[in-house]
Image 1: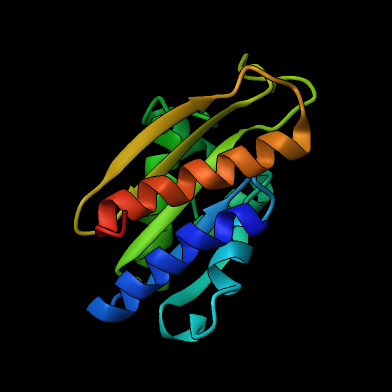
Image 2: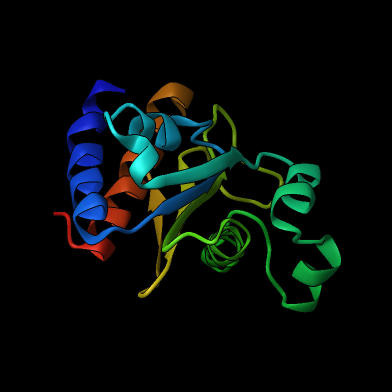
Length: 163
């Protein structure tokens, strides 16, 4: 997690300066995004809350996104559209300025949707919104989790102007 702290510190400083908040819904990064943001002293000034949304049950409970809603919108998990919906719903539910979402396949194998290990989609919802896909090309689960968290934080930093 130490490699994530410098970027988390920049994000924290920018959010505090602007009196803005962030919430997080992450899946295959397993809590590393939230851990990095919470490791910065003063996190209570900008971090509203977060969840590891790893299963359909968690998605329904924490984000109130049903499988029927996803089917109706033709959205599948581990896609940019899903990450964007998850970020938007998290932002709405936690009433934060920004929300960051991540969903993918850390490995060592791919997911049941056909994505290979090392695939994730991240999204930011807020005054501006953006989604991106990362494919590391490797099956190292811990390494992918760190890469997913780093990419998510990079995307947030870009959107809040902290880079």
